Length: 387
Length: 167
Image (cartoon, rainbow over all chains, first blue to last red):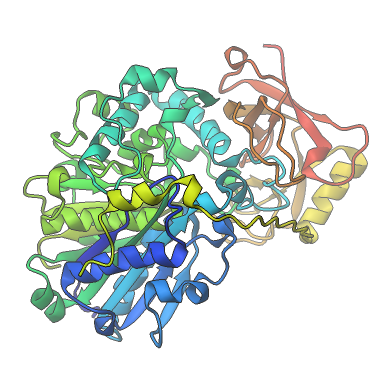
């Protein structure tokens, strides 16, 4: 039987477009120090460290070596993860496995990316298969846009409904001291009038490129109970992959097969039958406004084709029935190697009651997702109750 | 003592004039093998302007790109069939944001039409260029036809683009 595991501490940097004041090691130190302070621990208390980062973005290979002063890994077992958009959740799930296995008691998961030091669009294009995809790929934005039109066609969502997601994210971000894009006055009109990047995606529909790092500490049951007043217990984890090429997934956003498969497995493991009612908050990996609406449908928050209506009804606002991304989400902060782990950290903050002005009152069950690679999904369900 | 000052104070330090820059340019050339299935596909494309897929004997899905194993049934795939050159648009866009083309290292000219295309006879889709850049003239479900280059050398860009067909 796997051991019970909980998140006991988190730390984040101030995420920004350019953190020219720090190098990668110093950026990581900022998150690691805050996570250690959060649990009143030192690096001596950490048994193993897992690093998440997408090396092609900075061209900073072997970050585990060059940045070791920043993440404190001297003489500690460590592994680096490099799975695309899911990097952060893959690292979190691995940390869960490390502790659940009984081999390590306290494990730190770190995610970071300093996108200002590289070239994001080009790096994303090189992620495609060199023979079959790279020669025609259209960067992150063009590739996303072709999927968005399929989804609009299938579900009937409008550009206005997507714009509401973009507004929700940037306004929520104002309640999060770590968020990159904070836009208190943003309106639906602003989003619709922002520069067209690739129809239907406009500049404000898209996530930013950020510099940032996050550290999350996982512990086994007795340590978790001793070190955290209210640990965030890992209730379920699940991962699902797609077939290898972009064109293998028949409807892309309109039918996200890996998101459906992974979420249903996680719901079942956590005993959740009605996610909209039984989840209190969700931190999901929405790289663009349209994706969040598609994810509502594929996560089972609403019926197929109802994603637009859910945002219209305010269900996913901070004050709604199921707040989605109170942190401001990926639309406000996207240091790629950290992004999915930030989802986990934010979900944990909600369970621990430490989410400050973005706290969802009485949150007991939280969902965190990672999405990326070629339409791959990671899911974690965190709970105030022990599994 | 807090070794890490408040985030805002660090932000204030992030000014260009305090930054020391060391210019650094990386120019890397890669060469990839296309593999056995790729060799057959690209030879047919180069020599006969024909698009080929492989059919699964169990579920009968036809895969493009061709590959050795069906991802649904896990059957080995050996039966080659022709697909296209006509197909249907599954998703589309007009890319207006410039970015570096990894094939050339140069900025790819924008705007250009870009689509997910289900080739006739295939169960999967291909991402490729469209010959149209007017958003009002493109829609999901529209029929398209591959336009091949005169001089082909065995790459996906032997297809110049897909042309929208008259309704």
